[in-house]
Length: 98
Image 1 (cartoon, rainbow, N blue to C red):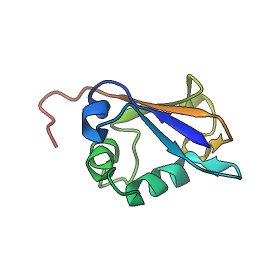
Image 2: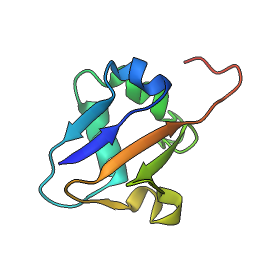
Image 3: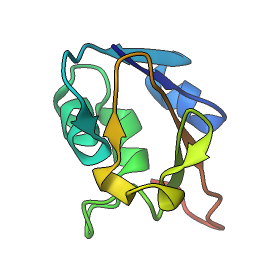
């Protein structure tokens, strides 16, 4: 199981501060994002996280795995294992209100 810890404005979009995703095998961050987009109740959250033109969350959030920026790992190909904690940290964008 991978835990997604939500902070800041993302909590209000998801109506929760934590989401869990069951996974028996390692999963890439990009695959976790794809699963989240298909998960019922997360559409508003994922609309805020994902950049629709790039299909990439990184313009809108910094993604941490166990408090390490995925930019210091393998980016969206970083593997998530059982008990990992993913924290998307919102990036402020002046005048942006999706």
